[in-house]
Image 1 (cartoon, one colour):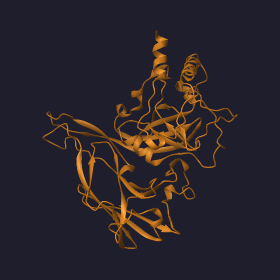
Image 2 (image 1 turned 180 degrees about the vertical axis):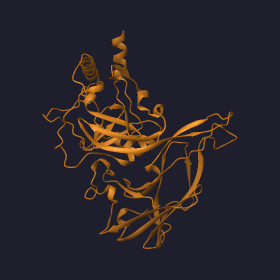
Image 3 (image 1 turned 90 degrees about the horizontal axis):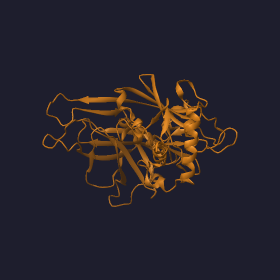
Image 4 (image 1 turned 30 degrees about the vertical axis):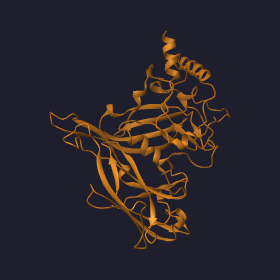
Length: 370
């Protein structure tokens, strides 16, 4: 009976909240029954004393790092979504240029090789806390992207079965966190953020405390290539008010009016596509993305701006929000009809590849002017 329960747990699938466009590209597993059987055998091997590192961690795979010319990374938009959209949850990341073969040419099996393939090691205030394993069964864009999803199979850590809830870090409390991403025996990326807690002393409050993540969400915005060819500007918002509506404790979101203006060489160039104010429904603690297309100032009824409409010059974007005292400002430059990336996104200038901002070929990231 125990074996049947374990097998049932192994077959559960967790798809997370993957982008619909990406899901269409996913390479699905060939035979789940066969995979589940292999995972069981792998689990037996580990529990019988297979090779482990100190502390019970299984040995890592040695991968063929000559598979791709580019260094691996985690896409920045998946970092902000995966770490900020559900406070304390650590998954749903998209890794780029991760090898799918070992150094001796064997194909990595996302299920059977799970224990030695994709991991995140967690540090709090520079102290190592623990590690999480991830499934690498979702691969797309010609094998150049791999999703780090919570495994469909449970795994053993220090001799105990680990469940889905283990991918939350809120039990470890507030502090400065660092996520170190591993593929096989290589640490290829790192990400820092703060986990804070908002506390109320109101004895009648429905909720007396909430956890919030802080960091790059409020410091970066992006311009995205939409499939239509339009330029989309986006940024992130959340709020930290325990009870924003005193009349209704169940209403935890707030409404924020916002407008956008773009300037070129100091002159008005574009504004948000909708001539009226945009309204953002901002969630408590959870970071959400808000975006809009743009329309030329001199063509109020014209088509949306495309990247090709940005000619050489110096640009500034101002985002005015009803709940903030001053606009958010982002600057960028266009040279030779191309946007000059910030240093953190420029592979020719970023000296530390483990902190590269990966935008792939559809996200240009902008830094907030402070």
